[in-house]
Structure formats: structure tokens, C-alpha cells
Image 1: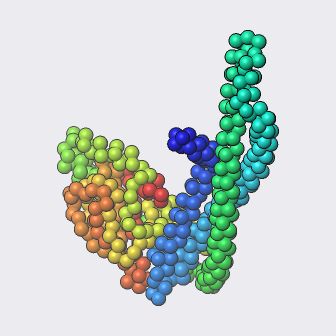
Image 2 (image 1 turned 120 degrees about the vertical axis):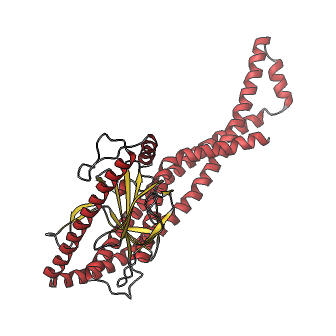
Length: 412
């Protein structure tokens, strides 16, 4: 009896899960995206808008608002996808419920007719007489088999009614829950759209003030771009010098490596293994700070408010908490610690022929030649005394080749 009940509930579970699996997987994926976007908005509010009392440039305010607007637009889009998928699931469930009700009604009618027929010949005596009236043994055997099959079929019909009734109840319960979820998502989207409208109005006001003095702000952006190019030159020179020094120290080259000719590391077997391990973890590396939101992504693009101004971002700029600890994203060796001209401290960590660079540090906790492990603190991020913002500039290189950090860091 226990086993039959277990089998019954197992069948119900298989029937239900098989019907819902494909859509629930998609729903789960969308919910993960939605939660990730909600967390991103929370971090943007915390890291970019926590210093409202501090003096912020109009350019910074516009950029911060733009980032929150884009994230909120993504949130609205994903939430709409969830609500639409729920609508499809609700319609599917309604169709399944109608189909099940029809099947259940037919089964009950068949079962009732079977019971009525069985009642008419239910006595043990009539069954015995049915067998004894057989003309021969073979006919008696066939009649006995028929009686067994008839009893088995009746039992199977009863179980089928129970299964479909239970499945119908599960679908009805799920339908109620799906409608609640949809209503909740629609309400959340309504609130998000109200906030988005207000943010766009705020941004329009700021952009209008920018346009009044477009030349001045465009010059500021170009000056920052010039500073970024100079900083990138320093980093490239630093990498070449570090490669030359490492190769000469290893003594693996026939001739001495000069800074000008240094483009690739001469790797030991151990360094090759470390490089392979680093490469195998592409897309899985930890963030260089525990809490952070990408403020500027890698690559070249036009400024959103000044189309005539082009910006190139080497690496990524991550806004984080003031005085946040900066950590190594992978095992490696400190290749260089340097105070960059016109900037703050930078730490270069070697992972075979890969290099990760942590720039804009206020303090450093490691020195050149130190072995570091994943998540090990290497310094603290510089916090701007005027704006109160803390931004780390993170770069990834393979030898002297610049790479997109978002390809390497988990969910960046």
C-alpha cells in the first residue's frame, strides 16, 4: 500500500514537472537577470548617489544618471519579458485545466458505467456460474482471464481519475500563484516607469545646462581624454620595462632584452601552467573589489551628450565604496608597484604571460616580487576628497596586448 501511494505521487510529480520544466527554466533565467539588475540599481544608488551633499560636476551627474536610466530600462524590459512569459504560462495552464476537466468527465462517465455493469453481476455466485457454464476448460480459462482483466481495467480507471484530479488541483494552485506573480511584476514595473520618467526629466535639465556652455564642457572631456592617453602610455612603458626586467632576470634569452624589444614574457614551465590556469578561468574571475558597479566600460565610443567628442577607455572604471579594499583577481606575482605621474598608485600582478593592473590606489599592501593569492588584499582605492567617489581602474593585458576586462570577470 505504501509503495503504491509513493508511486502515485511520483507519477503526479513527473507529469507536472514535465509539463512546466521548459517555461520554468526560462522564468528562472529571467528572474536571475531581474534580481541582478535590482542589485545593480541598488549598488548604483549606494556607490554613485551616496555623496549627494558633495560637490559633483554636471558631467558626472549626467553620467551617473545615464547609467541608472539604462539599468532601469533593462530592468523594465526584463520584467516585461517575465510578465509576458507568465501570461503564456497562465494560458497554457488554462488550456490544460479545460482539457483535464473534459478527460476527467469522460473517465468518470466510463467508470460509472463500468461500476453499474459490475454491480449487476457482482455476486460471487454469478461469477462462479459464469465460469461453470463454460463448455470446456479453455473457455473457462479465457473467462477467468477476462474477469481478471476487467477488474484490473476498472482499478486502472479509478487510479487514472485520482491522478487527473490531483493534477488538476496542482494546476489550479499554480495558476493562482502565477496570477499573483504577474500582478506583482506589473506593479513593480509601474513604479519603475514612474522613477524612470522622473530620472529622464532630471537628466534633461542637466543636459540643457550642459548645452548652454557646450564648448567649456567639451574641452573638459577632451582634457580628461588626453590625461587618459598619457596614463595609458605610462602603463604600456611600465609593462615593457617589467617584461624586459623579468626576462633578463630569468636568463632564458640568448641576448639581453631591452625595454624597446620587450613584447612577450619568456615563461618557465611553472609560469606557463599559471597562464593556462588563468586562461581557463576566463569569465570566472572575481571582481577586484567586493562591491562595485562598472562606471565606464572598455572601448572607444562617442560621448552621449557631445557626439563630436570621442572617448577611449583602457580597461574598466569601477565605482566602489570609499576606502574599499582592492583584491587580486587571481593567483600571481607582483610585477610592479608604481606611482604614476598625474595619478595615484598602481599595482601590476603577473599571471604567467597575463597581467592584471589595479590603478588609482591610495595605499598599497604588497611589494614587488610578492606572491599573491586570489582575493588577497593588495591596497585601498583612492577616494576623491571633493566628490567623495571611489573609482578603481582595472586593466587586463596578455604581454603587451590590451584586453577587455569584461571578458574575464564574472558577470561584468
